[in-house]
Length: 186
Image (cartoon, rainbow, N blue to C red; front, side, top):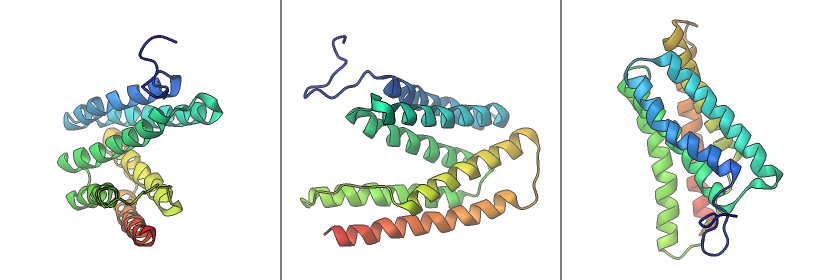
């Protein structure tokens, strides 16, 4: 193993899933740039490739190639992509600003809550809740549908508008579930 492949304490850094995740993280600025320049079709395919790479690195990690670094890097990368896409699609007037604000606020609420509990000396281990996994899936579907419609001129009446409402509801439910869980952790 080359020097630098492990952190102090032995945590693996240089693994195939981590390399895939890092490449996905590096694709975030490109995805933002594509959307901002109005190239939704290429942005859509980059978003699809990011999703497929996420599935691949997860599959590899579950087959013994995972690491502590990857356990932190993967969800951080997923959040970077989702939050960036919501903010960028709102800035490009593809999605309403309020849904981007709601998605970002939920993530800040969860991270801020974990940090606040940690500062207060509470050990917090977050396990994704079912509603959170559902929310993430719905958020991904909304981004993909919005980019697909705008990139290729495909219009399914009320699809994106309906997904915005469903994502808003699942985002609120997910945030509330984590806040409720935090009240129990204390």
